[in-house]
Length: 145
Image (cartoon, helix red, strand yellow):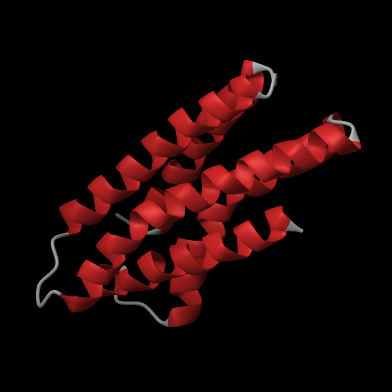
């Protein structure tokens, strides 16, 4: 239940940043949601599905909790830039890019520490990093940048 609560919190925090990107993307909210919320969910959805298929129940629930702690931490890093995008008269897109990169780097480092501390294979960490690169590439091409 804790993992579900953290995941919902992560979605809410990410939404603040995601919807602030409309100042740059200028799209209807359905398209904006698809691009900025569903594409980023790709990484965590794939990781959770793999974990569900590969890990026994106790290991899976622990892994899911670790993943949601990492996810909510990364989402929290995006919030200040999201608020900035909403409030600034002419927000700078570079700050959004830096915010996303900072979020990804912090999540990677935190995921590594928590996985190692809990005895998980580094393959899970590598899977995250590969999937986040795929995720960011998808977002880049879908956004038409």
